[in-house]
Length: 138
Image (cartoon, helix red, strand yellow):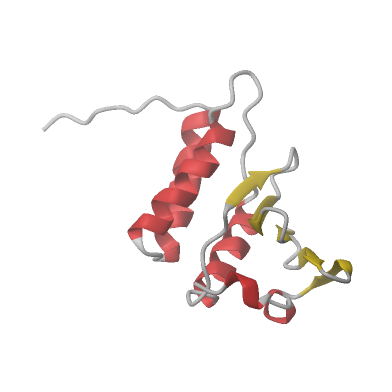
Protein backbone atom coordinates (compact mmCIF):
# COMPACT_ATOMS: atom_id res chain seq x y z
CA UNK A 1 0.00 0.00 0.00
CA UNK A 2 1.41 3.41 -0.93
CA UNK A 3 1.30 6.36 1.36
CA UNK A 4 0.20 9.71 0.06
CA UNK A 5 2.15 12.76 1.09
CA UNK A 6 0.01 15.73 2.06
CA UNK A 7 1.40 19.12 1.27
CA UNK A 8 2.41 21.12 4.28
CA UNK A 9 2.23 24.83 4.70
CA UNK A 10 1.05 27.47 7.14
CA UNK A 11 -2.62 27.24 6.07
CA UNK A 12 -2.72 23.43 6.02
CA UNK A 13 -0.95 23.13 9.38
CA UNK A 14 -3.14 25.78 11.04
CA UNK A 15 -6.32 24.27 9.61
CA UNK A 16 -5.34 20.82 10.86
CA UNK A 17 -4.61 22.21 14.33
CA UNK A 18 -8.01 23.95 14.45
CA UNK A 19 -9.78 20.81 13.17
CA UNK A 20 -8.03 18.66 15.80
CA UNK A 21 -8.98 21.05 18.62
CA UNK A 22 -12.60 21.14 17.40
CA UNK A 23 -12.69 17.35 17.28
CA UNK A 24 -11.34 17.11 20.85
CA UNK A 25 -14.16 19.36 22.10
CA UNK A 26 -16.81 16.74 21.25
CA UNK A 27 -19.47 19.32 20.43
CA UNK A 28 -22.58 18.43 18.43
CA UNK A 29 -21.75 18.19 14.72
CA UNK A 30 -23.89 21.16 13.55
CA UNK A 31 -22.28 23.43 16.15
CA UNK A 32 -18.80 22.15 15.31
CA UNK A 33 -19.41 22.77 11.58
CA UNK A 34 -20.69 26.29 12.30
CA UNK A 35 -17.58 27.13 14.33
CA UNK A 36 -15.32 25.60 11.66
CA UNK A 37 -17.04 27.67 8.95
CA UNK A 38 -16.42 30.88 10.88
CA UNK A 39 -12.80 30.11 11.70
CA UNK A 40 -11.97 28.82 8.21
CA UNK A 41 -12.72 32.28 6.84
CA UNK A 42 -9.88 33.74 8.90
CA UNK A 43 -7.51 30.89 7.99
CA UNK A 44 -8.19 31.34 4.27
CA UNK A 45 -7.88 35.12 4.01
CA UNK A 46 -5.86 35.85 0.88
CA UNK A 47 -2.52 37.36 1.68
CA UNK A 48 -3.36 37.88 5.35
CA UNK A 49 -4.50 34.65 7.04
CA UNK A 50 -5.02 34.73 10.79
CA UNK A 51 -4.41 31.62 12.86
CA UNK A 52 -6.55 31.30 15.99
CA UNK A 53 -4.54 30.98 19.20
CA UNK A 54 -4.98 27.37 20.40
CA UNK A 55 -5.48 28.40 24.06
CA UNK A 56 -8.08 30.97 23.08
CA UNK A 57 -9.89 28.43 20.89
CA UNK A 58 -9.88 25.79 23.63
CA UNK A 59 -11.25 28.36 26.11
CA UNK A 60 -14.08 29.26 23.70
CA UNK A 61 -14.97 25.61 23.13
CA UNK A 62 -14.89 24.86 26.84
CA UNK A 63 -17.16 27.84 27.53
CA UNK A 64 -19.63 26.75 24.84
CA UNK A 65 -19.54 23.17 26.15
CA UNK A 66 -20.22 24.39 29.70
CA UNK A 67 -23.21 26.42 28.45
CA UNK A 68 -24.90 23.90 26.17
CA UNK A 69 -28.28 25.07 27.46
CA UNK A 70 -27.63 28.47 25.84
CA UNK A 71 -27.76 29.32 22.16
CA UNK A 72 -24.44 29.29 20.29
CA UNK A 73 -22.76 32.58 19.35
CA UNK A 74 -24.27 34.59 16.51
CA UNK A 75 -20.79 35.39 15.25
CA UNK A 76 -17.11 34.63 15.76
CA UNK A 77 -14.07 36.73 15.04
CA UNK A 78 -10.31 36.42 15.40
CA UNK A 79 -8.03 39.34 16.23
CA UNK A 80 -4.65 39.80 14.53
CA UNK A 81 -3.12 38.18 17.64
CA UNK A 82 -5.34 35.10 17.21
CA UNK A 83 -7.70 35.84 20.11
CA UNK A 84 -11.16 34.39 19.50
CA UNK A 85 -14.13 36.71 19.97
CA UNK A 86 -17.72 35.49 20.22
CA UNK A 87 -20.79 37.66 19.94
CA UNK A 88 -24.45 37.21 20.69
CA UNK A 89 -26.95 39.88 19.73
CA UNK A 90 -30.45 40.91 18.92
CA UNK A 91 -30.12 44.08 16.83
CA UNK A 92 -31.24 47.24 18.65
CA UNK A 93 -31.91 45.20 21.81
CA UNK A 94 -28.66 43.76 23.21
CA UNK A 95 -25.12 42.72 22.37
CA UNK A 96 -22.85 40.48 24.44
CA UNK A 97 -19.25 40.10 23.34
CA UNK A 98 -16.63 37.77 24.82
CA UNK A 99 -12.89 37.73 24.10
CA UNK A 100 -11.26 34.44 25.06
CA UNK A 101 -7.82 35.52 26.22
CA UNK A 102 -4.99 32.94 25.95
CA UNK A 103 -4.11 33.55 29.62
CA UNK A 104 -7.37 31.80 30.60
CA UNK A 105 -9.58 34.83 31.24
CA UNK A 106 -12.57 36.20 29.37
CA UNK A 107 -13.03 39.90 28.62
CA UNK A 108 -16.76 40.53 28.32
CA UNK A 109 -18.97 43.45 27.35
CA UNK A 110 -22.75 43.60 27.65
CA UNK A 111 -24.84 46.38 26.13
CA UNK A 112 -28.63 46.46 26.33
CA UNK A 113 -31.16 49.02 25.16
CA UNK A 114 -33.86 49.53 27.79
CA UNK A 115 -36.66 52.06 28.17
CA UNK A 116 -34.55 53.92 30.73
CA UNK A 117 -31.58 54.09 28.36
CA UNK A 118 -28.55 52.03 27.48
CA UNK A 119 -27.17 49.60 30.06
CA UNK A 120 -23.45 48.88 29.64
CA UNK A 121 -21.28 46.55 31.71
CA UNK A 122 -17.84 45.09 31.15
CA UNK A 123 -15.21 43.02 32.93
CA UNK A 124 -12.46 40.41 32.80
CA UNK A 125 -13.15 37.18 34.68
CA UNK A 126 -12.46 33.48 34.81
CA UNK A 127 -14.80 31.70 32.39
CA UNK A 128 -16.94 30.29 35.21
CA UNK A 129 -17.41 33.78 36.71
CA UNK A 130 -18.60 35.53 33.54
CA UNK A 131 -22.20 36.71 34.05
CA UNK A 132 -24.32 35.02 31.37
CA UNK A 133 -27.31 37.12 30.26
CA UNK A 134 -30.73 35.50 30.29
CA UNK A 135 -31.23 36.82 26.77
CA UNK A 136 -29.03 34.10 25.29
CA UNK A 137 -31.17 31.20 26.47
CA UNK A 138 -31.60 28.53 23.82
